[in-house]
Image (cartoon, rainbow, N blue to C red; front, side, top):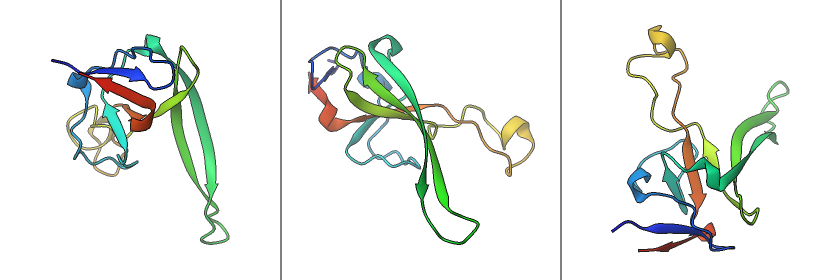
Length: 124
């Protein structure tokens, strides 16, 4: 029997499937602590807001910050922030590098939908 995930604030069914849930020991660059990560979600249940910010990190005069790009996942019913979309999922393609030109190229990745456990209520 599948688990039903609801918004902890408004109790709306978010239509999240445990079949799309990544295993808890899967490594992600952005971490996975106190969160559930899904490979697919029903986008009609959420609103998405782009977030692009630079966090101060003064190491040298020429290096002054870490840029973090992510997308906020907001419950469409109550407007509560329930998680983020990161681009550190599994690679989209097989092989080495972008367009197969070698390992020095950026490998495009699938999105990972990361939900805060405290923002979800789960029932079986």
